[in-house]
Structures are given as structure tokens and as C-alpha cells.
Image (cartoon, rainbow, N blue to C red):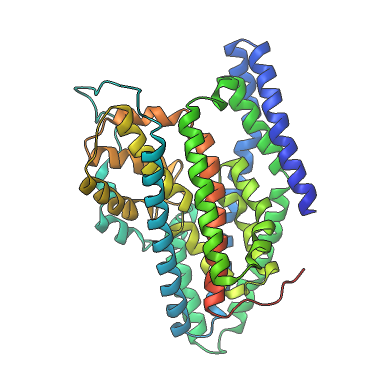
Length: 411
């Protein structure tokens, strides 16, 4: 079934490109826009279904994973190791993106003129990215409000508290734990139903995009897009190499197992869409259920390796396009700023663009530069999402190895 699903996704991508190109060539701009509007119904439906199941799925799997750990001491130990790995992986992603954009110089030679006024017009309010706001935002005012708005980070905090409480009451809450397990099983089943329409959503998304923007959208900013994907490839290689050193060559089988999930994330430009498949693949490969259910939800809030790299790559690209040189000190400050602002942005539509906009404002770079990356942001978001899947899969395997929680594979 996994191979068939992968074939259907690839076929949907190819067919979407061909149909979109045909529509773009045969229809007027107005008619192509109308047809694209109808096609995106399927994409919108699919993404709404995904958003519908994320909150209960994350809550139930995380509560069950923590409750099965046994006590708060174990939760704290695993939590510290997990966050430490996430911070290190994020820093490596940011630095690698910074190095690669300087080597490739995708924005050099554009020679854009720095606008004298209105640079900040329409900019995102940078005050929303303060450390104080980030920390206070961790705790939900109401868990129901957090679930209604899919605030993943807040759901994670509440789930950790609930799971830890269940684990600390010994055997006095078997009914609650059983209920959480049943909810998790039900949500995974519902997710399976939702995933069956993924190829249709992928086809409609690509066809609609190319029908309205033309085949040129795939080659626009070739140096920028190509350079970024080369950088992502290096990051993938680095993550897998470190995982092989820590876990062993068996981790290569895990990478083959999650390729379907990575392809789904790439095609839909949403790493959330791949969450259930990654969770299942990790457990089938041998990561214990409690580690997989604990690490993966946290990874979706803190371990966005692809998005981290994009923030530095795109920000320096914009500076290069306007011929602005940032000092070493400014670039180090930018890395630290992005470490704070990028974490906790999971679940926000086009979160990387919001973070980049705040970074541009902080360093007085032209806000108009955001338009340079906006045209190809969806294509780049596909690569970011797939990289986030790989990064979270590697993180779960590494933490499981450190905790001696890798078992024989189910398959």
C-alpha cells in the first residue's frame, strides 16, 4: 500500500503540471483563474481535514506517550535531551543556510534600488516576536481555545502537564489512560481516511498554480531556488550522517521508510500532513511508542530545520539583491534572533515569511524584498516541509537510541 500511495502521489504531481500547463496555454487569464478557483476546492478541503485532526491527534498521542514513560523524572530527562538536540539542529541549519547563501550569491547582480520611504509599510508588527510574548504564548488561556485555533505549541504544553500528571498518579487512572489510547487509535484511523484523498489534493494544487502563473513559475529565480534546494540536500546528508554515527546504519532503513511521508509533505507543502505517517513509520522501524509520541509533537514546534535554513538563506538573498552588506556581528545577531522567532511559529500559515519580515525590519532591510521570495515561496515551502519531516524523524531515532528505546522493527 505504501508503494502504491507513493506512485499515486508522483503521478498526481506529473499530471498536475501537465494539466496546469495545458490550461494556461489554452485559456485566457480570466478563464484560467476561474478554473483554478474550482480546482483549489479539493486542496482547501484536504488542508481543512488535516487541520481538523491535528489538535486531537497531537493531544492524545502526546498524553499517551508521556503517561507510559512512568514518572516525571523520565519525562524531564527525555525532554532535556530532546530540546538540546532541537536547539543544536536549529543552529546548524541556520549556520549552513548562511554559509551556502554566501557561497552561491543568488541575489548578487540584481542591483535593486533601496526604497527611500515606505519600507516598513504593511510590515508585520515586530513586537509580536519579543521573548516575553513567546514565553507567555506557551501557556494557553484555554485548552479549548488553543485546540480551536490549532495552537500546536500550547497544546503540547497542556498535553505534557496532563501526561505527567497521569504518570505520577501510579495506577489510579487506568480508565483515563485507556480513553486517551482509544482516542489516539481513532484519530489515526480517521487520518488514514483523510490521506486517501491526498493525490487528488496534490493534483489540484499544482494544476491550479501553473494554470494561473504559467510554467515559468517552476523556473523563476532558478539560481535562488536551485541554490536553496542544494543547501537542503546538504542538510539532509548532514542529518543522516550524524544519525548513522549515533544510531548506526540501520537508520538508513528508516529514511527509506519515511520517504513517502517526506514526498507527501513536499507535495502538499505541509509537514503537518505527514505527521501520522511519520508516527507510524517510526514505530514500525523500532522507535518505542512513548518516545515517538513524545518527540514528534515537540519537533513540530521546535525542530523546523528546513524553515530555519530558509530564514537565513532568504534574508541574506534579499540583502544581496539590494547590495546591502551585513557585518559579521549583525549576522551573528540575526542567527540568535531567528533562533527565538522561528521557534513556536509552527502552524502559522507561511510562518517563514512572517519571521523574515520581522528580521528585515529589525535590520532595516527593505520590506519590499519580501516580494522577491513571495513568488516562489510555495515551491520553497515544499522543500522546507520535506526537510522538517527528515529532521524530526532523525531526532526521534537519536533520542530513542540515547534512551535505549529502539526495538526490533514491526515489519
